[in-house]
Image (cartoon, rainbow, N blue to C red; front, side):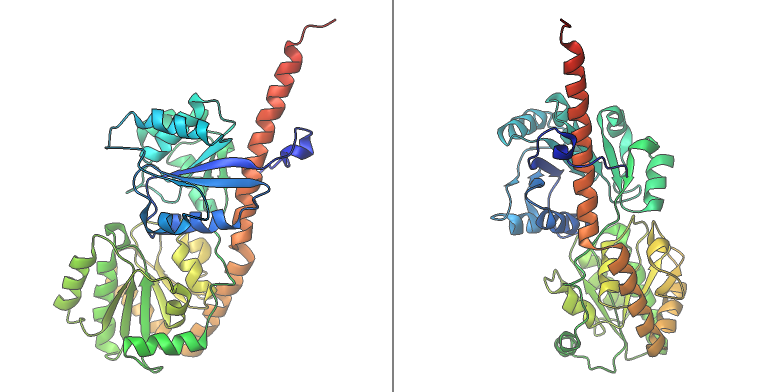
Length: 398
């Protein structure tokens, strides 16, 4: 990223920039959690953020009320073109300097169009996945010329945005996801407590996942791998943290596989660091990802990771040093990898330590926040400089 400094460093006046983060809603999910953490870490003297939910606030949106302005209910139905008028009114009312759209779909389209129609200086689209279910689509590509930057969450994700989504390379900026490594720390006391609540002791091998229960997470694969692992480790326990439309089907599959007594469906949890401390292994079974936050959180709590080889995961999980990677959709390979980790406790602890070291050095919340702050300020300063230059050129010479 070629940041050019704060506006005041360019002789353009120095003030906090008011930015609207446009998103559909704020349920519990990776991108939404990142946004919450990002907003809380911004320096209010540099970036003053607000959340603009086109639909309902969602669980995380409700949590932000009282900390930041949270707007919602701007779109009535899927093809509600009047959302453009409502967005324009809101952006003017809140004196916004720009918008950051979070994810693809309607918010990416309407958010950028509203900002452009008002001539706002900063228009950014942050993307967090690769393809389905969040493909950019033709309509959103039409607005590429009015977009100042597209944020990718990893180098391979940036390559995807250029090669597959066909965004100009000079507009793609890589800002790696970051988490609060102080909050996400291993706790022996928490480990003992959560295991007691699950009905397991320290000797029980436990594998878990934290994910929205949606199709692309392929948690059916998690359960099928668990059934295979049970054949070798009959005392093993399995934990699924999260909620979503797949929950009923997953519970039925667990019963069908004879796992009802060995799988704990925990729903949404606020104590994720404590839950992760209770695991021996974190597993991700997704069919597609960009840069999953859940892996960063697991590593920060010193848990080894086994994941499908998707998105930028191979950039994060160093195979044989902090975890293992397996092909998408392969339950047998997933189960074998779990057994390899669970059967070598000393080595897997070392993998967890290596994972935390990587997250602390490359994926801190502060580094992510600095990346967004610098990008926003650099775009604003460049626009202000250009406007100043054009004004000076237009003045009549004496």
